[in-house]
Image 1 (cartoon, rainbow, N blue to C red):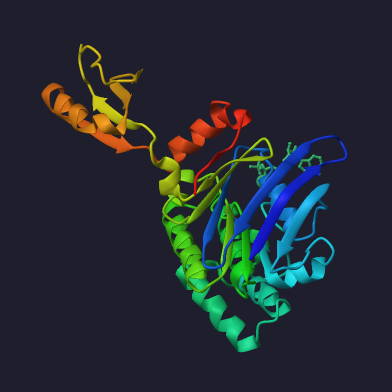
Image 2 (cartoon, rainbow, N blue to C red):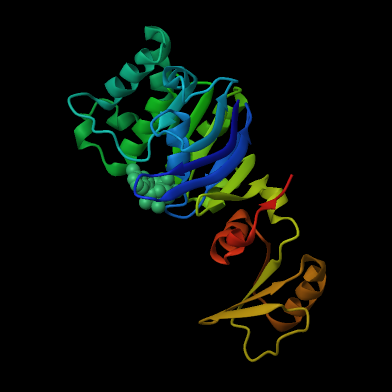
Length: 303
Ligand SMILES: Nc1ncnc2c1ncn2[C@@H]1O[C@H](COP(=O)(O)OP(=O)(O)OP(=O)(O)O)[C@@H](O)[C@H]1O
Ligand SMILES: [Mg+2]
């Protein structure tokens, strides 16, 4: 669906927002683009839809060049921007339906899809309210509906879960999976890393404009350490399999190799009634890749 090769963007003030990015996005998959503030995620999406011109490198969208042909890019891509578009003088439902029609949807199809989306995200009560009166989270959900009411073959969502409550975030993640199941390629930027883990097929981690890891969430977490959390452990000595200890009030967290998991459980059962053993999740891996400076030393590519 989308092939990006050695893509670099240097803004006129010298900011190197993207630095040699190479990645592939496939139909029927959700690709999660993760990275700290300023890592270059929005810049990357803006180049695909022709809002920002690359400094160098190559983008191919279904084999065509969206930089040379941004009108083509906009027919193939649906895009939910990170910043709110001002919506005035229309209701939420009208805003969604107008975009659906502009993107080429038939009147009846757009109306029924709009009704379906409003119900699926549990925001029907605001459907006919003036858009300028909507809360931040509902506005974000309406923007999501606008992006997917007549979805392109590539759907790009820049932080769709920001400001959204936990229950509706779940509904939103389900809709994203539904899009992929229908054969759309989805590129999703999010800081809700732990939640996104269940939705994403392919993770791309950006750090200072560079790709520092790609792979499935399970691939990225494989081989990483496990965490043993203990509540009120009392005065115990550190066992030899423990690689690091972190104390926070009456909680204690030990990191260990996955191979030592059964020893750790036996030890924990002998020392405390309350403990939990976790395998590294995507969020742990992400923090390690972006905080430790590993990203600066070179790429970790899985699969
Ligand atoms: N128009 C611009 N002119 C100059 N620099 C810019 C411009 N837009 C973005 N940048 C810089 O490019 C870098 C990447 O910004 P970008 O918005 O792509 O990051 P991001 O990963 O989307 O961050 P966030 O998670 O905060 O949204 C930052 O250093 C930012 O300051
Ligand atoms: Mg951004």
